[in-house]
Length: 374
Image 1 (tube, rainbow, N blue to C red):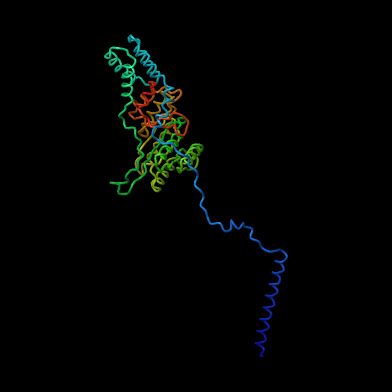
Image 2: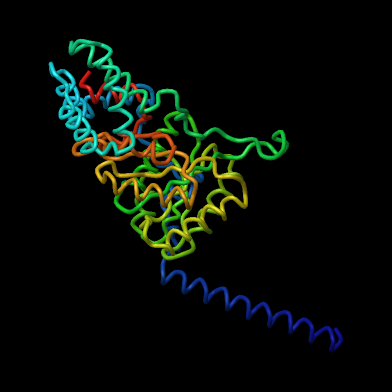
């Protein structure tokens, strides 16, 4: 064996000695510390991935017949019809009696213009009837009130999906509904209730929380969305409300939703800057397509002040429909006639309570019958 071979053999033997010593040291440490255990429970270690369960969505009441169910509340809170029937059933109707009729109507927030029109027509028809039979008077009053409310006005909500582009060449886009109003009218609650109605009708709904001035408003809308299974697009508190509205409409189109409901910040009609901001929200949305419905939420108990609000909002965002809330309790009913005459825009929805299903389509015949106690 030559010297080179001997050196190689000695090197290999040295390496084996080093490796053996290292293995022995590891074994010694392991024996001192005990065996290494898998601290995971067998079930957790072997369980397959399970996606998170979706939130539970409340059962929704059907839309049909809701106004009839709420009729008793309206009937119990209205004195307008009873007062008129009492006056018109008198044996003698002189000028003083007709002035009382006008006073009842104006007190009930009907407004001067509609009151004069109604009284003039009633005087003509009552004189022609010749007798004061209560049933005849009731029938005449019902006909004239119904004519003033407008039974043939289109009160449908534009919430159907819309062809996108000429002849629908790009498919369909969601209907966009912008909801506006002053603080305290029940605006955000109305958005939530309307979402509930639409979901019950089989529509897919996306909510836009464009009231970025109040964190509570976005949280409230989020609660409604969770209850009915409608996602909510929201932005940071104090952020640009127009950007939130734009994103909501964009995501609604990309997600294939049927309806996008956009809640806006409560505006005081005498604050020019805030009203300008509301106009901006609508213009930004319209960069993607038209706004199909602009609903103005009015508190029915505010009377003539509600008409002032309505005029200003109509000038800024072209209101297409009215939602009258709190039309039970202290509301006098005449605001329905007044606001329609003032704006030339129909009342489309009414809120008659605090319950989640207390929002109903406005039915002129049900309304008039309730006023008269039928």
